[in-house]
Length: 70
Image (cartoon, rainbow, N blue to C red; front, top):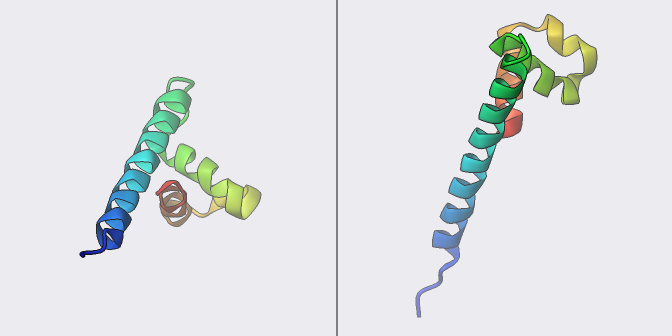
């Protein structure tokens, strides 16, 4: 009998990625409607890890913010 573990892991990874993408899209729309720049939204997310220094990191901390939602 073949195990379903690899298929289940793939499904879980895809579902997690989809949830992260939806979370990121919501954050961009929600804060973007309030005048926040997309880079600032990503840095806001990274701020959960780095604190206030996230706003001084530029694109690197924005990438961390994207990684936190995935």
